Image (cartoon, rainbow, N blue to C red):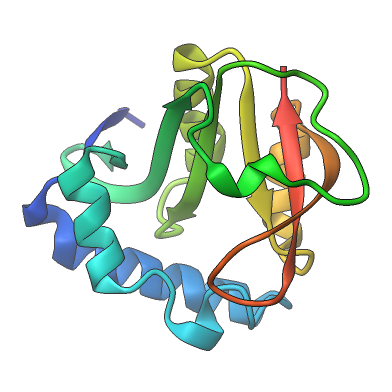
Length: 166
């Protein structure tokens, strides 16, 4: 396994479209049909925006895209995290955010590898996931994240579990 991470490029759009389609099917097959599959998330225009703003990243194995995610860092990189219900963030100040982490399923350990890459760039990380997304919850907990409460996202009315890693 020779994994590496780089910024996503427009030429990656076909691979990203296929990767996220596989991720939606995986989630639907594993008890999470609403998080992305119900609305075809993320749509192509969001993927293009991720690339154009420099927040989209791909995980590659031998030059082939096998994973993807969005990474943001700063004082308040995710405005949706300003309001947390049924809990509280434990660490104020700058943090990094991981969104839309997905794998094509071809290589084991991509999630852990991507989270580790993000942790090297920001010692404090936050992420959120749907209550039905048990695989993502397990990954976050395995990587040292702690559930801190509930946040809401603009895409739908479903609550999201909010996680934080020191």
